[in-house]
View 1 (cartoon, protein in one colour):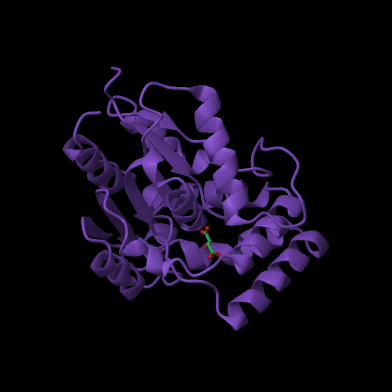
View 2 (spheres, protein in one colour):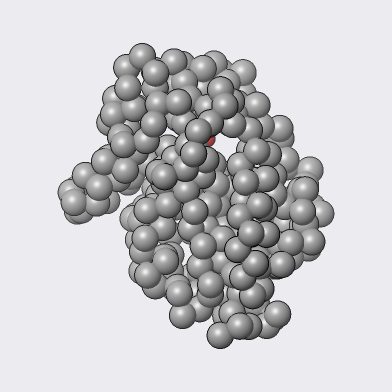
Length: 254
Ligand code: MLT
């Protein structure tokens, strides 16, 4: 068991660790799986006004050091969307701690001016209108039409997961994402095996975004899951898990 890789799953915005329930259940024979709540989300502790991607990455580094799991000196780092922004911030600072990288439904670029203004509005809305309003508006952007029509239970559980997040945590993350730098230049320095997964219908991270990361990262593989949008791991856990399991089994043993 000790030569299993340690897989650190980083959730997106505004999610908590339950985003990864289907992966934790399916992949625990293939890896030591860690799926923490980011600060402020789920059971995560108090947050400052702005949580930068670097601050989340520092929290994760601390968590790895404290757990001291076998293999946690070099981990497989997997982030979805905001989790991908955090994974890149982690990799930039501690490349020696990363054995392999999985970037799901994410991008390396920074926000546009318009995007930053929208983050300010999200932060305001979280506090003034409440997170359930944001959750309701977000659903059609993150789940494909196929998912929305075929799996109402999943739609309800994703809405509930987003709606229950704390307004201060949502605001701090939105403002932190607005501040994140463009990490596209980092991509060409990545030398670890990298898997890029996205949904064919992800409008938040359109396919060319993932294709560009694939082009820029030397040892990368791109997998596009049909019929899914932004939450590819929950919309098609069977395909997602099989892809990730194959990737894990292709890694050299520690
Ligand atoms: C996420 O799912 O984490 C968000 O869509 C990321 C973002 O808003 O840029």
